[in-house]
Length: 134
Image: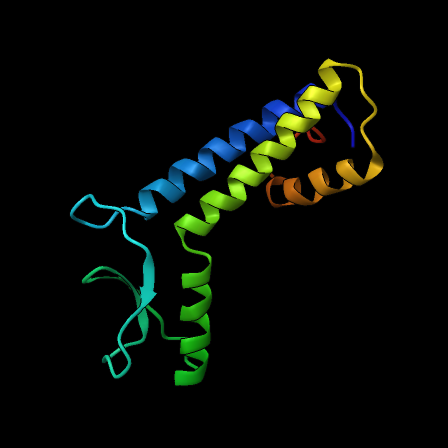
């Protein structure tokens, strides 16, 4: 983990805020309300994801109805509400990292490993602390 702890915290807070903004937008139904995502009704013409009465996406994997259903169910499980909860947990972890650094407390390798695992999804981001030039 190269870069300072503060570099990592700033980078992760920025990415978390970007992801939250995207999840908040995805969680809005066309009428502006926030509704949980659900599978379309059984027997619908296409398997998909809906929020209220609005179909947000249909799923067609090309591998049959079973695969379509599995993928649609995965999309519902990773809906914006769950994404927001996961991002809140990551933000709490980054806050803990910043707190430890601010108070000169030891940051265990286990905590750093978890931070690295979360940060992996943004490894190619131009602001990633390991990509910055000294």
